[in-house]
Image 1 (tube, helix red, strand yellow):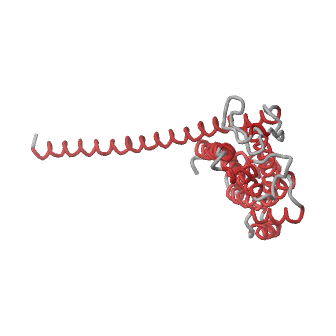
Image 2 (cartoon, rainbow, N blue to C red):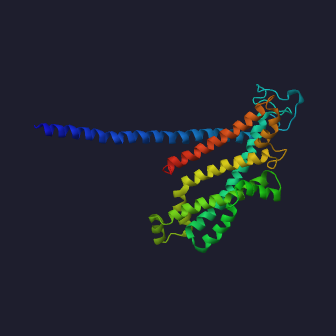
Image 3 (cartoon, helix red, strand yellow):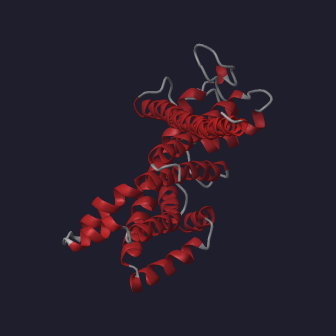
Length: 301
């Protein structure tokens, strides 16, 4: 065999090894990405279930009355009797955190039901049908979207007044434009797909096309958007309560607990640490769950 043939075989072997090495490296990257996606989903789901479980527990049981003041245990550090300590009035911080988190869950959940429900319906109708209906409704949507959601909510609260359910309604209205725009874009994309065209040709009704054929295909992106909206509602409710225009006494609020405890950061830091930590863990869990849903079921879009 000539030297040229041997060299050619060696070159070919080297080339094949290089070629086969490429997909192996890419496969490793995909595996790492898949592991990260799985971690986001699993960790987010577990953390969310734990936090929601604690909140639901607070609806039915708390160790102490959230408004019971005990002068003998003011600003007591965490102990077996009071695992999160007591505040400046001798109230049990753990009981108040559970109660305040319950108010947060009610407001954030109600915000998603109102804003998400109306926004999804508006976006689905305008995105699928288009035309004058799309132009009219989206112009109204654009006017509302011109204001940041928190500013729009503050304007509504200034008219209606503060309180748990008024804050929920104000945030729900303020969140409609963002959900409507997201869903409209998804429905506009899907209405030209082959499966939608085929459904039209065989006479499938419009409501069935909207909610049986298209909606399941945008569900991962929609669920991810809902988790983001939930977290935004949690943050905005806490911010408004911190400023004194959100949840009002006697209802507990994590935001107001943070506001009231800032004077006692040196003598009772636990009064601020535990409400703040609860907020952070709730937002982290829901956020990672939403990202994991989109990565796992939405192709990482």
